[in-house]
Amino acid sequence: MSETLAVVGAGSWGTALANLLAKKGGAVRLWALEPEVVDGVNRSHENPLYLPGVALSPRLTASANLDEAVTGAELVVSVSPAQHVRSVMRQAGPAITPGALIVSASKGLEKGTLATMAQVLRESLPAGLPVRTAYLSGPSFAAEVARELATAVTVASESLEAATQAQARFQTPYFRVYTSGDVTGVELGGALKNVIAIAAGMGVGLGLGHNATAALITRGLAEMSRLGQALGADARTFSGLAGMGDLILTCTGELSRNRQVGLELGRGRPLHEILAGMKSVAEGVDTTVAAHALARREGIEMPIVDAVHSVLFGGITAREALEVLMQRQPKPEFWS
Image (cartoon, rainbow, N blue to C red):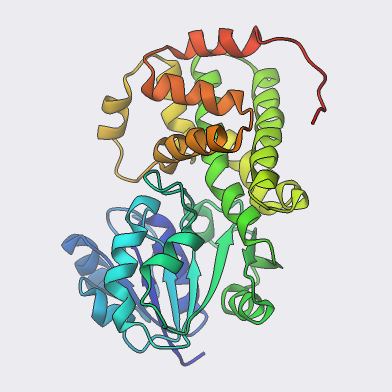
């Protein structure tokens, strides 16, 4: 691979994806906000803030200049935190090469507009810029991908050509990529699982057992699927990697930032204190705002999302939220 590739966003996930692409032979430019990240990548081939201890390919270089990073790139990977994708990609848009493949790897919903990243990209890139877009999601902790541990993900696009091209770009012996035509389902799965993971973490923090975690995963998946279908997603997507797969990982894996937020909430720590101590963004906090609003707009019952929203923003404790969930009116498991 001799093309020039760009990754916009140098958190742990962006750095892991950039390193994967660089090790495949691409000349990869990584855009980073922090001067210490730029210096670390270029001087010592390491991201000292977000992926310390991982040796990065010498074919990966970093820049604090966004235009410089994306100019001339045949592939642009958007990996900024979801709440910043609009502003970042609006700034990057004029420098993006017409016809470039843009792959979004951010997982979240924009809380002000309730938009998915697909909607954000359509609205933030220059009108008339001929681009192809695809959306990467699935169970994939950055640290494990960086260590070349076996991982499987999904890349979705409305264009089969764009999906298969993105698949070929990212596929490696340790990173298996499946394709999908369900952009809405893949994006919603990647976003909503973070909200359920906060709930799962709260259960652990409260000292609940494996029974509760299994129940939260299962009922959380039902909520995700209900909202997804209301928004036009394929129900099957939620039984796949971008749905069930990512949900299981994020609810049970100790590397999950969203689970960690819930864990500390369950132990009684206030949200502002938890977030102040985190270097990386826990996307589920802002996505909870959007998911709660979307459920109300669509008339979809999402009691776990409601409970997480009440703990994060409504002043109730995790224990009180658990009691509300457990004492809801009994009903059949499957209903419409």
